[in-house]
Length: 108
Image 1 (cartoon, rainbow, N blue to C red):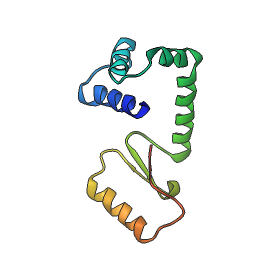
Image 2: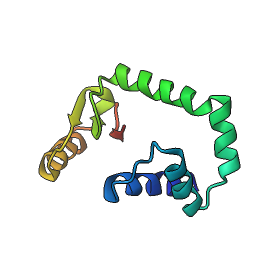
Image 3: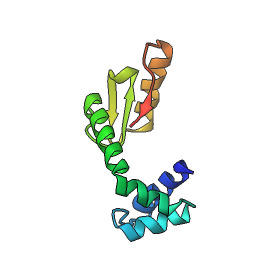
């Protein structure tokens, strides 16, 4: 259910141009995704969302993330950032698959 809610928020913002920072818009999007709004509001009131945001920011700083989207490869040794074409991503992953090392690819 969490992944569906995240997808709906991204679609509302990126595809529909809705202001998901507005509480009423976010509530409508989450409600449409079948999310328990009372649980979300309680988590926000307890500061859980803020704590997770700070944790994400600290991880992004540690990885040297400058923005979104970023694709971190090879245990942080390489980062593809921004509007990177499919061919570049494919070439980098193919290179890692030819000579696998300790790290793996992950989206941030």
